[in-house]
Image 1: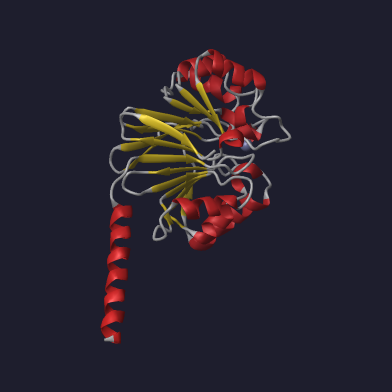
Image 2: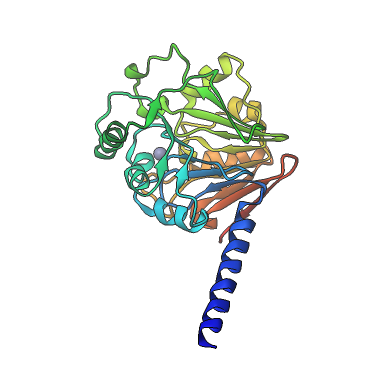
Length: 284
Ligand SMILES: [Zn+2]
């Protein structure tokens, strides 16, 4: 009798596990998480068919616990990792992510900049033979066949080694899923915005991640107007020493009637889209 009970218990465990796996593997809406990692950027795009794209790793290894609680336990694979630029508040969490997850491909600009975590990222790329390289305007990456991730900046002729401000080497991406468009700007400043506008590059988006944590040197009025977002997201840490976001930037977004979401006040910000409507929710 005891054996039968054990067998029955085992069978019900397997059924439960099967049901959980089945549920997790069902196609769902597109999910984009702007994680609350303090002062820094860390964005996870999870496609309806469970492909994962991580843009930046935040200022420390908090990103690992965010990924752990967001991704199902069986998903240890990140299809694409993008490092917008190697400042500490974007790169610091990346080596730890690379140790815990299988990374299929990495996009980054190999510019001359000293940072321990940037060096470590490059060392792990070399050690594991991970496919890695730069990306330029014109590149388009497809996921689930209907999701597009376009590179908006840099251009193939951008001289990134001549930068005055490392922020202006940021990779800028536009995510498109049906009617939903999200512009992800890294820490690009007005210098980059001007170049994008001067080249008439398609940047219209419903949601704009404010450049450089809402600094006053990003999000020019021309840029905001051309993007024409309904909502904006500010990746900022509470009480940060840079006083991001700048009050003028907030004022500018507000005067265009754009909804403002910020990590320091609302925790992690999640965008969900079925390709027609995008819904934004927050953890706080
Ligand atoms: Zn930054």
